[in-house]
Amino acid sequence: MTTQQQVQHLLWRAAFGPRPQDVAAGLTPRKMLRQLLRDSEAYTPLDSPSMRYQEQLAMAPVPTMDLRQDPPAPALKKGELTPEQRKAQNQQIRDAFYAMNTGWMARMATSPAQLREKLTFFWHGHFATNIRRRGAALQLNNTLRRLALGKFSDLLLAVSREPAMLQFLNNQQNRKQRPNENFAREVMELFTIGRGHYTEQDIKEAARAFTGWGYDAQGQFQFRPRQHDEGLKTFMGQTGNFGGEDVLRIILERRETATFLTTKLYRFFVSDQPNAAHIQPLAEAFYRSGYDIRDLMERMFSADWFYAPPNVGTRIKSPVELLVGLQRQAGLAPADAQKLIFWQKALGQTLFRPPNVAGWPGGRSWIDSSSLLLRLQLPQVMLKQAEINIALKDDENDLTPQLPRAARLLRSRGKTADEAPVSLTTVASLLTKVPPERQAATLSSFLLQTPLRPENQALLAQATPAGGSLRQQLGTLLSLPEYQLM
Image (cartoon, rainbow, N blue to C red; front, top):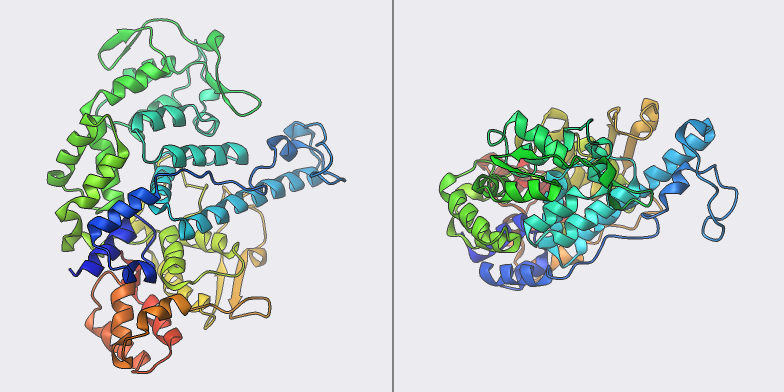
């Protein structure tokens, strides 16, 4: 691999793809990694007025006054809402989630803190929740972002106290004499140590330890001592009057937890095929560091095997990585940002809407006959060269699941009068000193992380003869199956 290929590989895995200026900088992989770490030191919350309306507004009567100037009406319970009020409530919630979604997509595409955002994206799937409370969902997302590069012990405790997680896994209903086991089970099975390292009795005892963990009317963590089981508990071979913090501490004392987490991070950042020879030294260092996530990432991205051919151009881009990468690499983004949400839904990955508590399965599950066709068509749609009609599936998690098919049809018919043309200035900068006969090869080297198959080389030569327009060349390269890999 050339130095440029190594840097591009690093920027696809530790970030959301390389930009032309990243390649032009001529940094080595080691220097680029140091820059990624330095740029991701600062934490900036995701926030905007459109994302953080007060939750009680969603339960209030339909307003007849300006909410920016007048106080909200008294909150109503769900059963007291009229159909019109219920519709208005759903619209408010949907608009807030759309603002959070598109705002985060913009952050992924433009933020210098690429590694922090990429890890936030990983933890978003690891600590998966799907709730209607937009304030709680945004608060959890910012907790993931704030602690993404810190100690996993701090992240785990903070997430365990987040109202979004407590609501999603029913710990708000976890009380002494009536323990709810949902959160206790998932915190072991999915978040920390994995199956095979705990018993059903451990789940029952952990559930007792988490009794009384909930949140108040303001959406903040609240420990309710009257609902907490104060009795002795035996968990993973230890006995004591344990609370939830004790359960998390005991789990983190087990080396199996470091191995489970390192394996999951390896599958996301390196390869779908775990390699024990790589993972075990990383897991041991992770454990000894006190679960220092930044240290683990630096070790992973500095390893020689990270840049080995079996780990380059072998992972299928998730829908979000594909959409954000098109913007970072080629400047392709719709004028209407909400189209990004439709495309996420059509491709099977909508931010803040994971399919279940296990998150998105990833890997080959991203590709089927319909999604692959859409993936290959999207670049041409964004370049305003093609027409596409997408009939979205009826999503049980959607806030408006009963819309007729016609209302779920997204149509893109090329550039419209109110859309600015796509600017290719940045990617064109790669070709300023490149002769026409070498431009397609230069673009191919920048855009693709895997060699072109012979039949696609012939297709590229036919579609983009020497002197062909940049738009032609980009449209062809971005529409090849090879672009789906990183």
